[in-house]
Amino acid sequence: MLTNHPEDAKPADGVTFLDCDVAEAVRIALAAAGGRNVEAHSPTIGGQLLERGLLDEINLHIAPVLLGEGIRLLDLPGGRPHYLHRVGAGDPTAELSVRYRPIRP
Image (cartoon, rainbow, N blue to C red; front, side, top):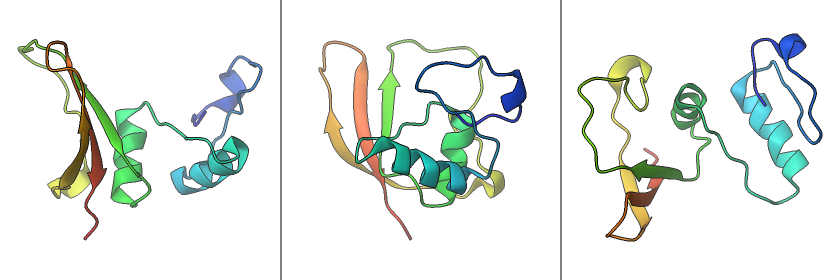
């Protein structure tokens, strides 16, 4: 788990707390995963991974509700658009779950 304050984290079995660059964290996570998937569940870290070309896929879960206000999914510096290629779609009768792969420039 990537954190700015690993000293404040509660120890947990199977969890390693890191305070390093996101690219280094990915390298460590991939080595520890032993061929399994590595997931990021943070829009801040997800944005950094996208900017550095370190994301293979993005899973979006879109609920059928409109919010009056909120934060952006990814607030990327410079506002450069990232185009995506749809990989799959979920059940059309429920929330929309789609998978995208970044199209690298």
